Amino acid sequence: MRQFKHCILFLIDGARPDVMEKMMKRGDLPNIQRYLLEPGSYTKAVTAFPSTTGPAYAPILTGCYPGTVDVPGIRWFDKEESSRKKLSLKRQRSYMWVEAPLLNSDLKKDKLTLFEIFKNSINIFNPLTRGINPANNLTRFSKTLYYLFVHLTSTWQIVDWATHRYLFKAIRKKPEFVFALFPAVDSLSHLSHPFSKTVLDAYLKVDKFIGETVQHLKMEKILDQTLLILTSDHGLTQTHTHVDLVDFLDKRDYRALHYPRITRSQAKAAVMVSGNSMAHIYLKNGQGWGKRMYLDELEKNHAGLLSDLIHLPQVDLVACLDEDRGICVYGSGGKARIREREGNIDYSVEGEDPFGYKGLPQTLNHTTSLEHTFDSDYPDALVQLIQIFKSRRSGDIILSAQKGFDLRARFEWPEHKASHGSLHREHMLVPLFINIKIKPRKIRTADIFPSILELLGREGTNEIDGKSFV
View 1 (spheres, rainbow, N blue to C red):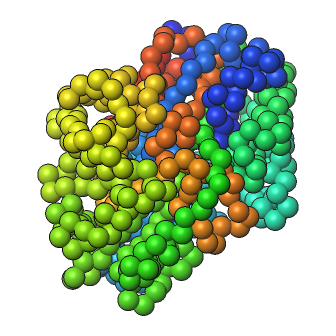
View 2 (cartoon, rainbow, N blue to C red; view 1 turned 60 degrees about the vertical axis):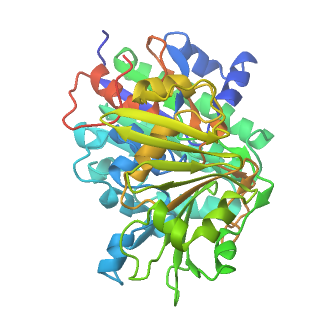
View 3 (cartoon, helix red, strand yellow; view 1 turned 180 degrees about the vertical axis):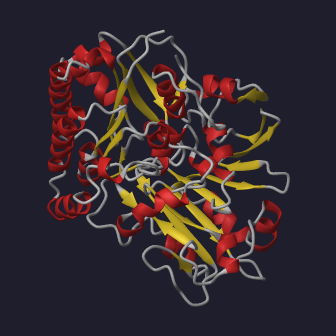
């Protein structure tokens, strides 16, 4: 097996594989074709739930799902912490803006990042930086200024250009690992839609930047020693209607906490939305926030709310835990139950299958579950729901929105015209290019982490969710 001394991971935030495939067929991405596809491989991979920036970086950089590292969303609420300390700074979180750096301290301490493994690493614009030498976090000072400017002017192409320029500086240092984030596709998709000319132009620019990066690798005489990977954290779908989930709960007298309104008298619930197409709902019990609320208590004390959510047309899936730690998933026409036991997954359905799976075995493991569901409308949904509910910070109820709708109507400026975060195929599938040949198999983004370690001759030191694909 070929061994490398260096690795550059290009992450196009929000890149859809179908868009890139069409552009490749038209010859619009010549550098990706020449330097990644021709000497290597292309496939689609499944990201993690919630399919949103931040939490979906964790599988790539740690080999672990968001639930495993206890960051179950770009926004979350910690019921246990709230019951212990009313004024705790760890009571809730939003990784948007000022709280973004806290992602690193919120991550479980026993899960290593690639920055902790490869001491000579470079980071460009990625917020998950635990373990990196501050001097090698090239955008630690400039990121806030860049993001504030482009957020006000909608000129996200500037950040992609800056990533390109920082890459030249990084390559001169001959680092072991580089994480280079290109955020324009995601941000411009939110402003328009995933197929707009502005978004397609952003793909073209990244292709150009990759070509110039390769030329710099040649100049430094390290191209043959460098592993090149291009992937994404999620896809997006166009949004036509915003659902005010907070208003939905307020009308039922729950007075929900939400960002930015995180203190509220007589609050009985908290709503934490990620990517706008998924949401955690946390409910207060009679004794306070306490611990997780299971299905029997939901049916006893919040049956009306649960029924209303299940029948809300804009909501696609409603999930919660029962006392046996099984996951109950409700769709408009039926209910499914997912239960993990000793690495195996039991799956049963009442009425119509909420996921629309056909011929799915009643017992699977994590590998066969991916294989059987990869080409469905909900790839890897069973494993992804299992992992998200393993976080103590996940909600009592988890929602996945219907395509075309999102679950956040207020405090979202500018208005989002595309969303992600759900279990839908268009949100969960991402492109994966790598400049080596790999055997055909179904891949998760969590598999990138151990594959990088293997290809650079390193051994993993802690338990992870991913498996090497090389």
